[in-house]
Image (cartoon, rainbow, N blue to C red; front, side, top):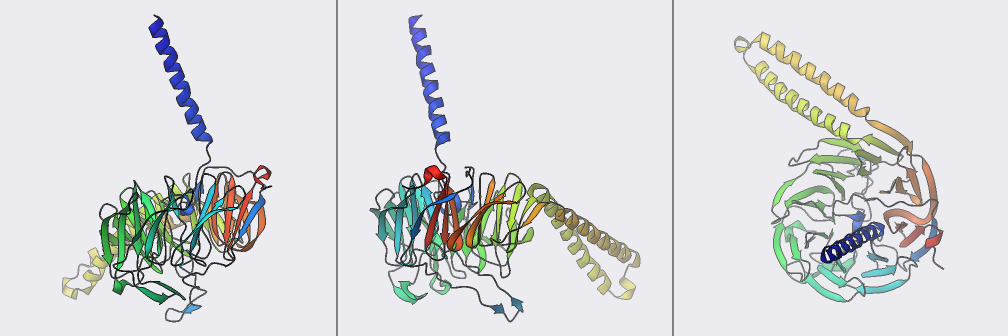
Length: 474
């Protein structure tokens, strides 16, 4: 009896310990260990921000970022398209990764990776490479992983910045003049992504020289597979799902690979750009030449839908769309169901239109007027159905508000955080009303959040940390 009582007591202690551990885990602040928080580049955090926020500290680099590409052409004369968007903004600001109480970022100005204390902004360590570091590090199990224009992928101890390993991705260490600097002929221009203990990366921006797509063992840097593409570059933050790897290609459209071996599956259709996110099996990317976000689902290459805008957040069955002048919310589930139905009707109409064209092309004595008339009637009815579905899709909009913060967007708790020219603002997710804003130094191209703090990165090399009064540095 005593033994049974002791066993019950031990079991109670074990259960209490497990519950206590679970509660402590729930109370730990969610990290933001890679660009836009996760491998889907979702830009979302469940943590709440307690508004209003105050600027608790500011880090100012001695040199502002030096983007590889300064901007888009003023206009596309061939297609007569004006007011073009810059489609390669990945290094316009020092994008940060957040883990524990530390902030990490790479610099395209002085070729270093920095680690700052999240509470005070004080530098903890820095590490030199031999070329610009254009992407935020990815923090994984106490190590920091990143690439440099020197053509190497680095692994550092995330606590002290000591080198663990480095690997040259291109075929040899050959330097050239590129983007105003001396860089590798195969610079690492794709932000690394880590999935299930494997690091995925790419190096090379000249397809004629070969662009190397690689999987590395995170602990040693050993190359597990390598694929070389000779038609497209690799520029932008890579994304990963359980079975697929998504590689932005600068101004061109993303490439989708099998994550197991790196073999190319397809290149999706769209208008190009390095901004991309995953929502389930849907890839959303842009902004194209004039601010267009395309959606490609599943194993297809063609677009299911297209939106006018620069950024999108997907959460809780809704899409939040961000354009130059507006922010809006959409009933995503209903919209996507209607879009799928419309796509089927489009295909039916196109197929029948082809048949009608062939029927009309026959000689008069071979034509069937009744069949032609019936096909023509069906094509017109399908067109009306498409119009009806399009109208229903427009009715999926839940709210729309003016927003003069067009440069970046994330979702933190129940607030959309948007960055603009010299300002950052918070908008209520339920109605789009602005509830807080603050001045910042420069144009906001980077936003991140962890530990109930908001981090804002600008094109002038400034990183602002906003928090509540208890987070203010002394």
